[in-house]
Image (cartoon, rainbow, N blue to C red):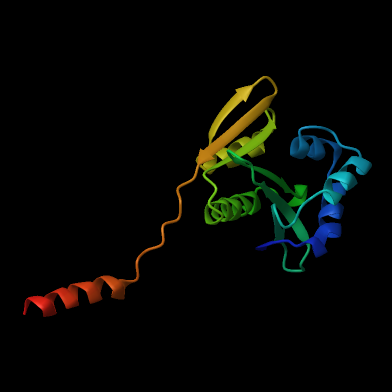
Length: 170
């Protein structure tokens, strides 16, 4: 299985993936049961430049999972869907890891997942990712603070300064 960021050229694959979801899977992914028309409108409105759309693919290049990262002012929202016959194989975990890495590299400080309280698969995925989960009514909110990626100083820079200091003393 491979994961990679999708582009606008793959919008039709995203549409087909979401349209193939069952009524219950659509309810779990979108926190609402969406019609085919509503899914098409949603996919048509995706901004592949501003948002990160991460896809998981089988060896035959078939899309088997999707994850989205939508940047917000305070926190970035994530959402996930994995094809039913490919669940419990680590695909959701790979997508979560990919989005968390992307969020960090983009300088995001906090991520959030909103899901239905009865979505036990999303609850497990969020918990394994170290997210704090709280439930209010029928919805659950999972969040996690992200640590910034700090670039290490080149090794030679430190060595050069020390060497020049030694030369001046000698």
